[in-house]
Amino acid sequence: MIKTLAKSIREYKKASILTPLTVSCEVVLECTIPFITAELVNRIKGGCGMDTIAKLGGLLVLMAVLSLSFGVLSGYTGSTASCGFAKNLRHDIFYSIQDYSFANIDKFMTSSLVTRLTTDVTNVQMAYMMLIRIAIRAPLMLIFAFVMAFIMGGSLAWIFILVIPVLGLGLFLVARSAMPLFRRVFKKYDKLNSSIQENVKGARVVKSFVREDFEQKKFDTAATEVCHDFTVAERIVAINSPLMQFCLYAVMVFVLTFGSYTVISTSGAEVDVGQMSAMLTYGFMILSSLMMISMIMVMLTMAQQSGKRIAEVLEEKSTLENPENPIYDIKDGSVSFTGVSFRYSENAKRNALSDVNLDIRSGETVGIIGSTGSSKTTLVQLICRLYDATEGRVSVGGHDVREYDIASLRNSVAMVLQKNLLFSGTIKENLRWGNKDASDEEMRHACALACADEFIDALPDGYDTYIEQGGANVSGGQKQRLCIARALLKKPKILILDDSTSAVDTRTDAKIRAAMRSYIPDTTKIIIAQRIASVEDADKIVVMDGGKISAVGTHGELLRDNDIYREIYNSQCKAGADDEK
Image (cartoon, rainbow, N blue to C red; front, side, top):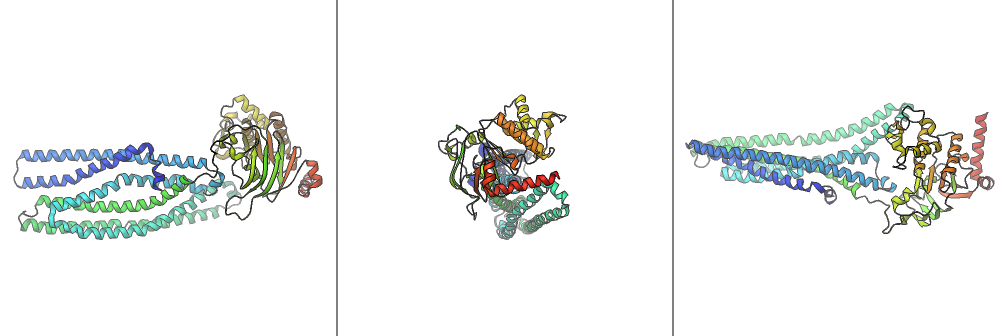
């Protein structure tokens, strides 16, 4: 885990090294100041002249200024290193997710990935700041102060030998009790974020089914669990403060009582006033160092769990990788499935696809139809390597898809998904996902082919109209047509429409298909549809049933020979007749 996270320090190594060095200098100066102060007090008591006072006073001022300077410098370099480290972590996590295959993404909840990018990174950032500053300062301060206390106080310093184990044991017990609670709370954070995400994303469904009360209760339950665990953990951690105060006052009482007695009884021969004041200062330093160490332990406990979750994302390797010598040129849009079987995970009990054999010539229009859950979408996802076949071979342009450079393959395949997605930005910006260099004229032409120009021209800002996140301010049919236009701008060798005209009327659907035939005649067009009207004029139609190909043929052939196709056709014809009545 540490090696994985350390890779994200990169250009902030210099600041990360400078911070502990400057902290060390600050600690040495801070621990030396009480020693010089004690010497000054003793000299004044002995009746020294102003030159001695000026000399020692000037030295104290210089040391204080240097200590302050090193402290400011360590704060600057520490914040630079920790914030930069966090920035790199977020960058690396995001880029890792971008490289994931669908199989990798299926392992993580979206809410969990968001928590790792936000809360977990923040925890690691704070822990890193403590590691390079407080975790250096506290142990050094403890050691230096302990040594100086024995130098200054002699036998009086043995009080620290008695107090430190008591405070150390108490802090250890506190940290050990709090650790399991901090480990547990992050999983509950995921549930909390998941509840928020689902509620916001499904706001229309929640309101239409009047389920606000149910969602509020679900959120309250998740929030209460997080609050409860944090409350219990922080109550335990809060014991640190009274324990620290008890030990501090115990030391002060002992030093003041026995120190004063020793000063008076020995007339300063063993311990003088200056030494006793230094002892009080060193006592505070020792106990505050232990307090800081306990805080570090708690923070590192939280950060350890966050670090493991971040490392899990960074170490996750994509199930899809480029071959050693990939092919970059896709000859044509021909597609071939040979003995293809597929399951979504190794633990899956059954295949999503079984023994699929299918040949599609370049430029053909192929319809795919079947009941819900027949794995139509799964079949086409193998073409652009969103997943890899578990068994068999999927070929494009005469080569196995696993032989191609992934980016080159996907650039040759345009896929309009079943769940259409538009991004925040103008219509132009969304269309240029298909071709970043597309001219205004090319965009208008693609939108005309997708029958999207008619509603875009009616908008006040036209192609500069701002699209809200997820396309919330356009209808389902408008969103589908924009996504089709975006895919056409890509000018792909293979175009896959995954039920992407379900929200448009049959007349518009027919116009879009006719436009595609004339605009991209050499492009292989694969159309997944629920309506037979959307695929009946295809060169061939594939009927899927239970993850297998039931039949392949033209509309007339399937209507004559295939029971599944005929049943779908008859049910849709009957439904159409009923609608006309």
